[in-house]
Image (tube, rainbow, N blue to C red; front, side, top):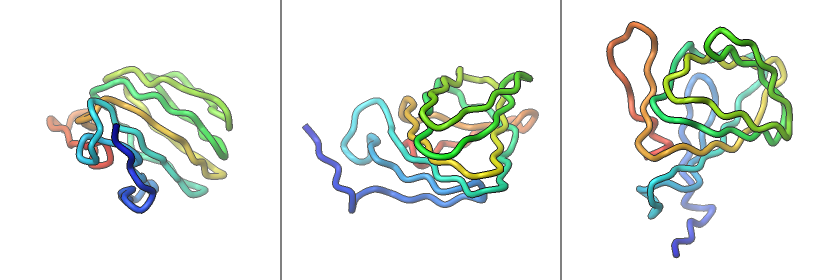
Length: 123
């Protein structure tokens, strides 16, 4: 059994928000990562995809997402499952906080870029 102390949580700041890693392989976990996403009001993220399924549960606020050309609104208490490789763009007028899990080592990419990048909060 591994206990990851609050003081050992890793914060990663990006232009789109703050990701706080709660559990990951580099913290003694196994094959999954768990992190908190905090996004301020008036934020629109880039159009991108992740090469693995992700599960998001909103614990505060709400966001809109375009997921493979389908528009969705995700409110506090809702859980959304993002399929692997689905194009997505997340936006919020009021800000939100979510808890997210995905397989460790997931990578993000943008359409037409030809490369992917490891999600540091999931490693």
